[in-house]
Image (cartoon, rainbow, N blue to C red; front, side, top):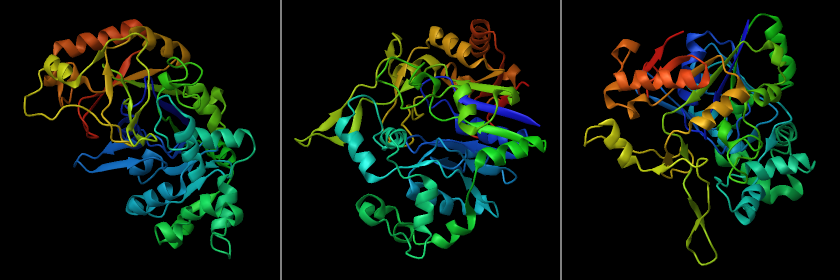
Length: 391
C-alpha cells in the first residue's frame, strides 16, 4: 500500500497531467482521487502524441486499471464533467466515476458573480463564487444535483431553472444514459480508506499550483480561492497525513502566471484587463528571450497558452526563494523538473540523464542544493515517454 501526492510547486502549468498519467501506470496506482475545479486543465500526451485534457476527471483515467474518484472539495461544472465522460468513454471503459455528494456545483450565477466583482487574476469560471456559497450553506451540492437530474422529472430545478436548467445533460449532450451507468455518488472518504486498508495504491492529484495558495502563495488577492499545498490536498480527500508515503512536487525552470488580458469586456465593450500579479519580484521575460537563451531552432513555435482560457502565459525568471518556501511547506520526497528543454534545447526528448546537456545537469544540481530534495523525474518533452525516471 502507498499513498502518493502529486502537486505543482509554482503557479500552475508545470505539467501535473503529464507526471500523474506517467505515475498512474508506472507505479500501478489502483485509485486516483482529485478535487479539481473547472478553472484549470490537466494535459497528458501519449507516446503516440494523442492528447488527453481534463478539467474534472482525474488524469489517471489514461491508466485503464486505476479507479477514478472526485472528492468533496471539487467544484464541478456538470456539463464539463459529462462531456469529458463522453469524450473519453473508450478510456473509461467499464469503470465508474465515483463522486462525493458534497462536491459543490457551479451554476451560471457563480460565473456572473465573478465577472461582476473580481478584479484580480481569474479565469472567471465561477469556482470561487460556488465555494463561497458552499461556505455560506447556500450552494447546491452534487448529491442533490444528481438526484434532481436523474429523478422522474428529468432535471426539474424549480425556481433555480435559470441557473441549473442549462446543466441538464439531456439538453446539452443528449446521452444521459451513459453517464447514469458510469457515475456513482458515494462517500469517497470511506471508499478511499477501505482501499488503503486493503493494501491499494492511491494517487492524490493536485490542482493549480502551490504559489497560488490563498494562504501561502504569492501576494493576495492574486491567488486562487483555496489552499493547494500537500497537507490540504490530503485533508480534502479524507486521508490521514500519517498514511502518505510520497510527495512529488513539480516545478519548471521559468515559472508562469496567467495573462492580464481576459475574455471579458467592460460596459464599453473593451477587453477587460486585470492584474494577475508578478512573481515575488522576479523579472518578467518574454518567450522570445527564452527561445534565444535555450537555442531553439527558428522554425520552432515557441510560447504557451493556458489550457482553459487560451491566453498566452506570462513567464518569469526562476524564483529560488519561493521554491525554498514551498519546499518547506510541502516537504516533498522528490521533485519533478519539467520543461528542461527551456534551459537548453539539446535536452529536448532526451531519454537518459547522461544525454542531458551540462547546463541542464548544473540546473538540476542547483535545485537539489537549494531544496535538499532529489530531482527524481525530469520532463524533456510533451509525451509520456519524454520522462527520465531517476528513482
